[in-house]
Length: 445
Image (tube, rainbow, N blue to C red; front, side):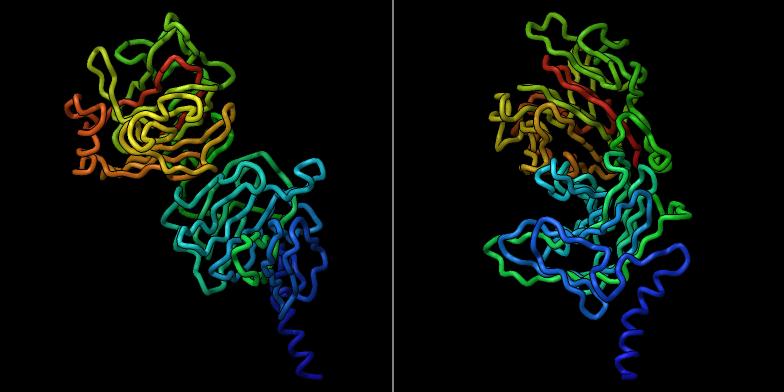
């Protein structure tokens, strides 16, 4: 009798400890009271004061969801995952009959024991897919420890969503799509070829909804999905607007002293290069008034059918042309340029005519939807292209490989192409309608 009582006290102790102060337990350590299972039929059981989720075959993603919804909160929990499985912690999530027959959708803090190591990244389950991959914050990839208990912290205060893994800051997202929803523990679906039985365990699940204050940590890369808005968090890491959302300030026509009088439009926070079927009303490319060397350039772009454009960097002008390395912007399915070049090096997000972007079906949005892009250039000339959270191009500038790539490209006839220490940033007018917004830059040291 004494041993049974002692075991009950030990099992219940984490819940008692986690209920101190403003913290409230979400799991009582005994049963699944307050939780409901949705979508798939993976197994969820309570064992030794833990929730144990087990994979099953031929089922969609399974979610054990809180019955209550939460808006602003801090959530902490510990989890232990099989190294061969994928999982996540849903928050501010929903399940509605009129949305894909009740499919769970919303924010997810990733659990990724694989070599990709994106644990702590933020995924938008059932909607926009990846919002914050760990390629944005690669130094935090080592935070998750395989074969060990890992502590997760999710902080949602207003539009700011932040995650930690083992007290290491992993992601910082600013978004307002879903301000409130349930919390859920995911057991991911598995293919028919994979044997069932992989497990993930959760314990010490607690939440705080009062007296919330943002946790101070060393600042990390911020993904801000609010159009043309610059947050204090971004300002703190040196991000500035490169286009202010309303005027031509900071921009001019390539090889010109002023901004083009035609061919470009600024309306409702969107900077658009207009379609010109006969080239009579084209305004030409536009460039920044300032030159840049090492930087993180962020921008959103939206394509129309068959459109072609690009964002160039390390641009130099000669009075007639403005040449530079180019982040390709293209409707791959409809524009013939996608099939030209070599090995697809003229497709969307590629380093135009030099390096093809890694093909990923999830990275490209439908025509008419906004894409998020980023170009990162470090002081030692390492350069990366990102598309909707995915790193799709990576190369080193001014080394032997780079020189060889130039020599076999259309730029072989341009001495010194792409090698300058600094240059302008250019938005290309290719005669097709393409929209831009949220153009930001951070100078790197």
